[in-house]
Image (cartoon, rainbow, N blue to C red; front, side, top):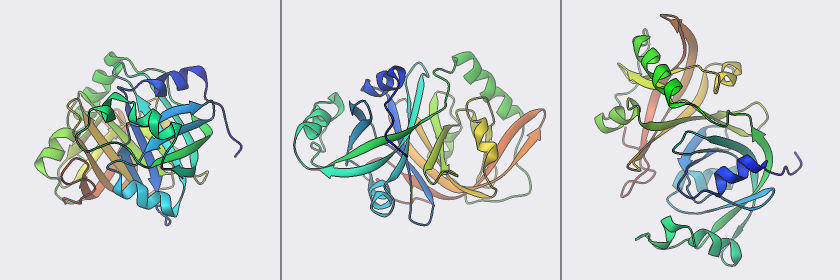
Length: 269
């Protein structure tokens, strides 16, 4: 793919500092990972940079496969997404300075950024520019009314993670290996856990493209709370099913990770 310039709206979302910015990567064998990487910031019309900071699995995947997908979500549920390639790493210069000037890093006790990835944009992910809060709440109520997943069993999800995955005022995104060779990433705001380590998410207009995946498919789900707690669960998207009139995807969880200090990148189940 040739470089692609970011449309003005996409760039305006990524230019904001207090925005949830997620980065999806895949390992050499196609297993997805999705992490909160708040330092993603545009520096050219077709280029972003982000700092190496609390991204253990992300960095390992990038060493194996430089292709990435990114999704940014604002407090108003405005969204923008893109795909690209990490083409370089820099340890000094204007890109490092730009990241360290972000408020989060200016006042961070864990020290500044000393290594930054340079990403060339290759494609824009088609997501709505905004999801209304009304639709968000309605979809969440519908997926809860759809009932529990039946006939499958995953691992037990630790209580704090289960609580976050069932929260309503949180951001949830799902990463996967897309059919274009790049990682894919989509919002799954209306998601809930069920018994025996299962997750159900509502299929909506903003993530309907997930229906084209060959199943079962390896996926990773990241959940971010308003107080900046973030966790990741991984497993298999087994099927899409309709229950009580609600079309949803069913994920069987087999791995759970913490993404917050002091257990960044550590598997906890």
